[in-house]
Image 1 (spheres, rainbow, N blue to C red):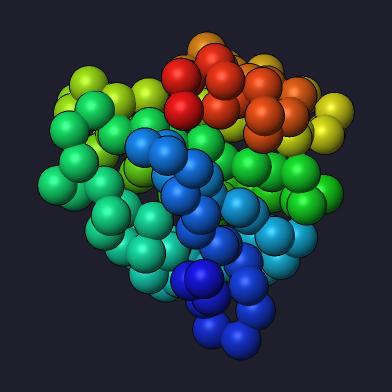
Image 2: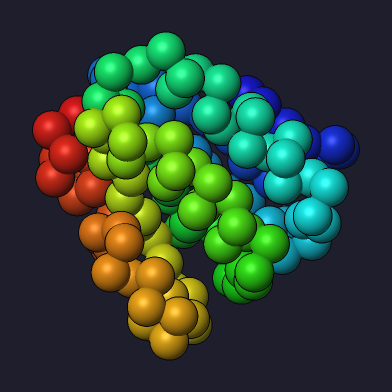
Length: 123
């Protein structure tokens, strides 16, 4: 739905009141300049939403690094002050380890599947 450049790095889907951000395998190729564009694409629908609910579905991502983590943090800075919730799902073991090592796993609840994440946030 919302491709970045020529690749679908991030697609947006609505599930009830929740915005599901479906990340694709190419997220590790995001450069710093694209983080602003990606953040605008993801955040635009949330700017006027009270208590936004956001699920980042990482099922199709094998690896991500600091640039994608910056996108997650940028989204968190919009969602949390508005009383919303951002959760992650579909993370592989490498991604879980990375988030644990950086202590970012304390910021976001992590679920195995999109269905579990949506159920947990009441969407």
